[in-house]
Image (cartoon, rainbow, N blue to C red):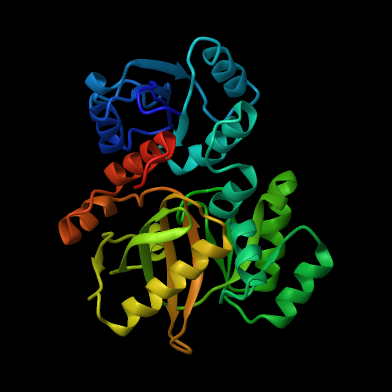
Length: 322
């Protein structure tokens, strides 16, 4: 793409997020199109001055409706990049990139950052330390896991964000009851050994397979504990020169490599197990962390993750250095 060619970014948003991204893209001269869910469309926080066109759909995950709609839009709009502003939009954005041959993360890699089973399998197969887990497709595999791995366990939906929908179970009979109640949805879950410990997160920027910025933090109360037991969500940055921070940054860099993240932003969680003190990979997402984590990072470092994500996409589109 030449320096003078108009860059058009299609932003997909199930929720009102990523405002600094939209503002930065607009500031740099990109044409910003917003494909937004009906529920989030009329949020007054959207920077309409930065949005050239807004398109509203009832459900941004419903296929083939979204592909039909965006393909129709592509008849008159030459889309340069597609960005997901919410975790629930990552898979949709990847599918659209594949269909329209727009550069960026495709469906296979998106699985590593959206599907909690896929990311665990890929990480484990590449030697990354993860808690014991199993898919729940096969009865024999599930039975053997329950016999081999001590309770408690957590039953996790593969495609929910954060701690949404996670159940902590203490008896094998409770696990069987839970998976059987899922019916046809059973295959969309996994079972994992519950690991007690401090949950940490690394927020990072990646450019051409290299982590160019990363900061490690630790939750005051693990997200699962807040979701299931209540309380106030909080997190704090770790001292950059601390041993924990150094171990986390190295683990995150290795993880981005084995999950094939080429460029963009990532929010990754690890847990330091009480039992052995080691850091285990929990999950990752190809997005800016929620719950105002971007504001924490900006206050601590001056780096606005959403803004930098826009700069990365624009540099890639223009074939410039970031």
